[in-house]
Structure formats: C-alpha cells, structure tokens
Length: 141
Image (cartoon, rainbow, N blue to C red; front, side, top):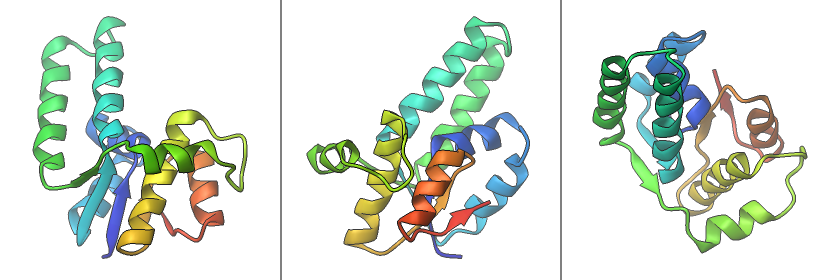
C-alpha cells in the first residue's frame, strides 16, 4: 500500500476501538509509510484528557491508549505546523466550510503531495474526506 496521511479522527477510532477502527488499523499496518501532523498528537492527547475528565474512560485506560499512540507514531513522519501549512490552511478549500484544525490537516497532506507524492488520506471526517477527494487525494477507509 502507498503512503497514508493519518488524520486524528481515524487515529482516535483505531486507538479507542470505535467503529471502523479495525479498518484504520489494517490500513496503518499495511501502509508503506505513514505521515501526519504534529497537530495529531495534540488532538489525540486532548481527546484522551476529555474522555478521562468526563469519566468515559479511566486514567489507566487513557495512559494505555496514549502509549499505543506514542509507540505507533514513532514510526511516522510528523510534519510541523509551519508557516507554509498555515498559509495554505487560511486559503479557500473546494468544499467549504472547513474547520481550522481540519484545514491544517488537509494543508499538511497537500504539502506532502507537493514535496514527495500524494498520500492516501486516512480520515473518517466527512469534510476532510470531501476536500481531500476534491483536491485529488484518495481517501480511506
């Protein structure tokens, strides 16, 4: 399989064992390479903090999930949220409205496409998927 861009919605579904999580895990396991944004780490961490704070998971489960993410993401190329990404994220996207953090993910995937080649967007977010497809990026699952 080709290079995947791992977006937070898909990563969290996999980590939390939610619907489509098994498909996300399979895609990550068979990818030639995985890229993402440093933003993904923040979003995963914040989601886990929210889940613990609202007693949807306990602190031990939160730590276990964070450890799983940390181990997996050590093998991923993580893009910084730099000026180039932010400039693109401020611009229009084909399927507006697109939330700010989602625009950063799409802009980061586009940066990878320009520098190396188009990644497959691994996302379960409807707007991210629609924009990725409109910009010529394949999507999974």
